[in-house]
Length: 90
Image (cartoon, rainbow, N blue to C red):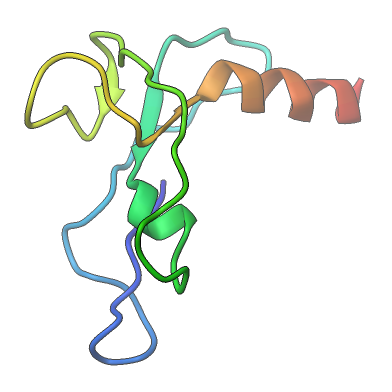
């Protein structure tokens, strides 16, 4: 799971933000992707934010994109995370 920071409170998370999945064993491949807003990745960087590559989220992206099509937000495939974690444990 991931949650967005509560910038107003200065700490904590924004309730209902981000995304959550059920438990996924390291041995089970997945096609889930998390979309992490660019503003969170570059938090504290004064505008304009650096340009990034456009990605097209897949149908299993969480949270679902509000506007279909390319995004310059970070699209993080959980399969990449799973493979990296699996390599540490195997």
